[in-house]
Length: 218
Ligand code: SF4
Ligand code: SF4
Image (cartoon, rainbow, N blue to C red; front, side):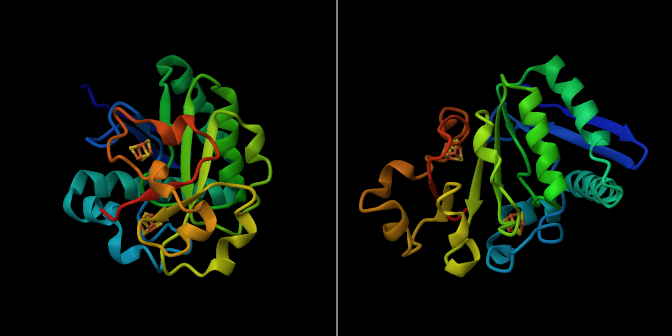
């Protein structure tokens, strides 16, 4: 399996894309940013965050994610997301990946950031895009029109229900195994939604749009 890292230069700094890791396989990880610093509503997941482990232990990862954060925050402040969407669209049209996971680490920075990632998905209909987010305050109403983009609302057992309940009719929820609310939201047979642990063979999160998912803590 060949992994790669691809760097983009912009007027706002550099950012990079990496291909998969041992769990993700040959999917592409879109622009990752700093875990725990560039996340919304992460007070309940911060302690158990696996991305923070990679960030802490691998200097190259830390440098890349710091660079990405700096660049994307500058792009967001300038509200100039075309600086990202143009080169990424060119890159994806050339590379034609079947699967792309946005933000293995970090979260959306703004509504405009969500729109930019939606636009990239629209421009690359042959790629299946996946995004988990805890930015519950954003407007996700247009996501349902993009067939190749699956957005799941990520909640932890202590996340108050009132933080995400306005989204349950709109987007699938990603729960942590053991959350007592799974029974209420998914029903009595949640087993079929439990993550099998290897995206290399599974890919369900990419292809089964609208399905809830249940993850074991890493
Ligand atoms: S939102 Fe994701 S990346 Fe951020 S601290 Fe929580 S688990 Fe980690
Ligand atoms: S359910 Fe499948 S695609 Fe989704 S994270 Fe788990 S292994 Fe990967």
